[in-house]
Image 1 (cartoon, rainbow, N blue to C red):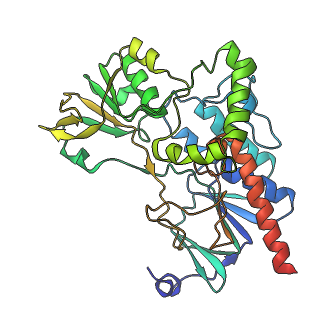
Image 2 (image 1 turned 90 degrees about the vertical axis):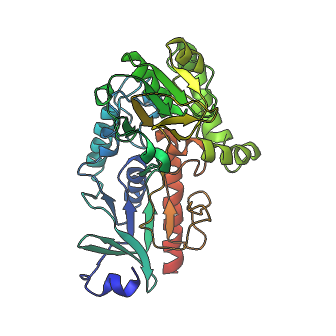
Length: 373
């Protein structure tokens, strides 16, 4: 759709200096820092309620970071510091956070398109049309499920479900389960399947793992602060040589296993197998030539960024948004928060997103001062 098609029958636009797209922890963090500066803004959220992006994940999901690191600026997480909140507790917290600071969130607003016209950004969302000087895309890169094309060749009686649609083992039929993807979601769901009595395989490359129990006493006292607050937050950043070296691998393969350990998965009966290369006779075909006769496939294969609605020349050859620490050089009014390794390994974690949000708001404020000068 070109600009003329998008504007021919559009209603008059409402002007808001800054529009934040997404009301998860990233968007609310940006809103908090804008509100502290007295800068007008609105947050658009596609879900009916704040926190639904957490509510809509699998039932047993718990955060990988303890509660002491799960609070946003100005409001600690209301749980014992060493506990690991459930996804529903996180959803409740985000809703309470927005209410406490009276952040202007409009729920049920799905953005269809963002483009630029006459020096301003235009946001189209159904019948709603907004104009802004600044757009903050505050969405994680987990929007559109990524499933290989050969999935359609699997036998029709095999239950196929992406991790984003998985809730609990009741969705699975009796028989074997193949979790495709060996990252954190694959490990968590493979463990849940085998504990529910399913013969379970997990395919994919080894992403590495954190070599300690995150809920153990050493982790509480020393290791969690060391890894979460120092290594992930201050060492592995785009400003350090080691961070710049690690970042491409993290973006391509994902981070290490945090809660689960390969030895534990093996001990409870999860069988590690090579990657899935295709199908044979309607069953998943492994790279080593074996076909697994399973009844269920859980695709833990990640997501596309889901930013096709962003109609601006800000993407690389592989479709990834081009930015430096969340700022887009060719579009000074556009920024991102919440993307993997946006600035640091901690950028998708609750305790890391606040720092990124504060930096983005500082940039918006500086841009406003420059325009007013």
